Amino acid sequence: MTVQLPFEQPHLLQPPPVLRGLQDQGAIHRVRTRVGHEAWLVTGYAYVRDLLADDRLGRSHPDPDRAARTGESVLFGGPMGDFDTERADHARMRALLQPQFSPKRMRAFRPRVEELTTRLLDRLTSPADLHEALAVPLPILVICELLGVPYEDRGQFRAWSQAAGDVLDRDRSNQGLADLFEYGRRLVARKRERPGDDFISRLCAEGVPDEEVAMMAMFMLFAGHETTVVAIGMGALWLLTHPDQHRALVDDPALLTSAVEEMLRAPDKGGGGIPRYARVDIELDGVTIRAGELVLLDTGAANHDADAFRDPDRFEVGRQGTAHLTFGHGAHYCLGAPLARIELQAVFSQLVPRFPAMRLAVPVEELRVRTDVLTGGLVELPVEW
Image (cartoon, rainbow, N blue to C red; front, side):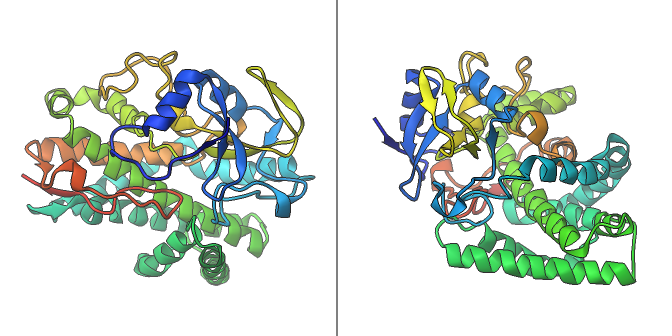
């Protein structure tokens, strides 16, 4: 039986019932995506983890125009890259980007992230929209400094990023991506003339072609702020809707590291997963995935697999044990994971002790999430104290 994936969540803090029902039935399921294409949805932790590192799956497709899609976004809605050179291209890209996120570089950058967080929190007054006051500006400030992107351009590039991530309108997504890359080209030209101590300037100095620098920089700009905006907002929401866990973190700041990991694990919005295409036929849990078929690796469901996590639907800031899969696994593990963790730790190491009485200003049922863009996330997060 083929099941239509849900794309509207009935409750922010609970997975859609249809997905929980599927997970109870097994680890892999035949489903239809938002645009009606058939795919395999993998929900079991062990299978998702293994497949994330399995080179029999990839992001490219030998016939991209006929490949199944998850949505209309040109970024992640369908195949990406060249089927014949994908592995080599990916290895080269990671070799160029990995040094930019080295432990040494990230440690040196941490104090600046903490300083930017402090400045934003100094301006916070009750009542406030924590989404607009903190979750949105901090990741933008951080990624601008890291990449060497002017902060005053944030309105433009955020609008282009959200257009590029539109899962409903492919023309809008195409135009947003084109605008974003054209902006990247202008930045690269500027850095060639006036280099600085930043991501784009360093890639230029290493002899990377302009088009490639622009492409990598704009992908980093998109991924480096949109996903972290969502993580900060949802992390705050989990704390504010679980007063016992909020109090535990107030009382014991040493729980910060595990609390941040739990904030990364807890969301399970449903509606899809990380898209991959089978490069060859794959036998998995009694089914055959044919070469070319779309496979959705649902890390959210995997992070709530009862075989991997004790009481998986409970939010527990002191949780220890199995590592979540939010940043992926294997060769495609998110390069920006260390930076995202630094930002989340900076936020909650300051927000929690400075505003221990913070609470939601509206019932959680009134909060809205974005369902039209790849990253999702809250529309607003009204709080008071």
